[in-house]
Length: 56
Image 1: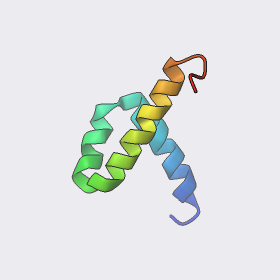
Image 2 (image 1 turned 120 degrees about the horizontal axis):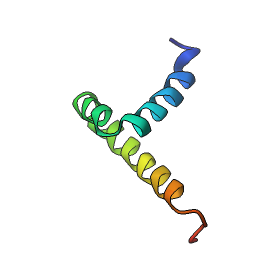
Image 3 (image 1 turned 90 degrees about the horizontal axis):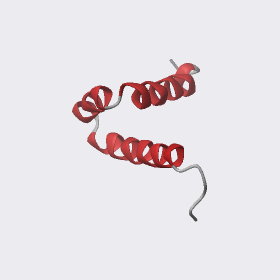
């Protein structure tokens, strides 16, 4: 599992973005802190995907 760490993270990110809350629920049960950071990343990703242009 050492070398597959990065791959698992990417796959998980795609899975969460695709499945949505289903995985988030599991995440909340396991690690609330990790889930918070993950949710923030997803929110940013979703916002970036929804916004075609940069609003910075």
